[in-house]
Amino acid sequence: MKRVIKTDKAPKPIGPYSQGILVGKLLFISGQIPVVPETGELIKGDIERETEQILKNIKAIVEETGGGMDNIVKTTIYITDVGNFSKVNETYGKFFQKEPPARATVVSNLPKGVDIEIEAIAVLE
Image (cartoon, rainbow, N blue to C red; front, side, top):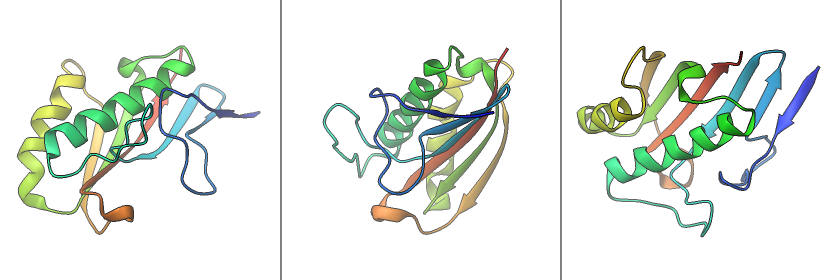
């Protein structure tokens, strides 16, 4: 019933969790931080680049199941500085240009000193 989703096109988990879990048609994507999967580089200091890398990672995970960004129905964005909200929002909007998913944004401390983390839920067809 539950299937673990793994792809080399997104960063490997840094703890005891999966990149994604598929249950029926629901895909739960773990919180992604701005790590370049090919190099392991952690992007810091440029919130637009950080956001873009995270969304590329999410895209790779959902595509591993045969879906796409249009299948995402809910995201949660965690940021450390609410002053970055407009920049995050602008970059985020490029990935969800029509019918964007429901979303929440939370200001919080994050692991590894990153400025942003995003998790997502997708419904596959």
